[in-house]
Amino acid sequence: MQTKEIFGYLRIGMRAVFVHPLQLAWHGAPDARRFRENFLPEGLVPTTPEDRERLREASRCIACLLCDGPAAEVGLGAKPSLVPLVFSRSSVDLPRSRAAVQQLVSAPEVLAAGERLCPSGVPLRRLTEWLAGRLARVEGTGGAP
Image (cartoon, rainbow, N blue to C red; front, side):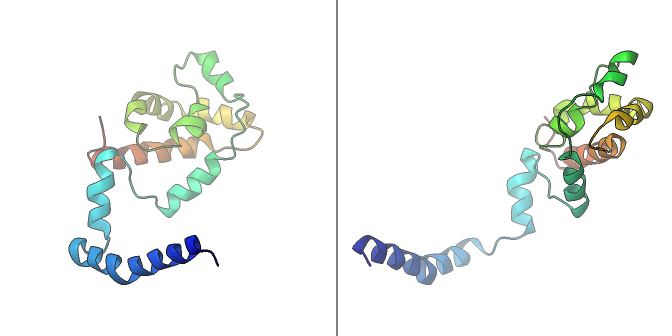
């Protein structure tokens, strides 16, 4: 064992025995209140089991953009492909896409047509409804710009 490794293990041991207990005494154990104070103002909301399921569904998108065809035919400004590719990725920027999400929520027939064209079966209507709910959660935390 080299001297560098010995000092590394010694450092880890000292941290475990002395530094970590002092940090816990000074700051207290991490809890939900500290999470909310640190992350909610930035628009980062806790991920629920439903969020994980919707994110799994959004990850099926292969970016073929076939779902955008029906939206272009009716002149819808928001593209359905943005739901799984962009809007689902982060809750931080979701308030900036409020208008596009609301436009897609109000056009379920366009989303249904996009779902029929999707080769990987991305549920655009369900994802858009979920995003509208997630947007409400983000805006309720003070994360909106």
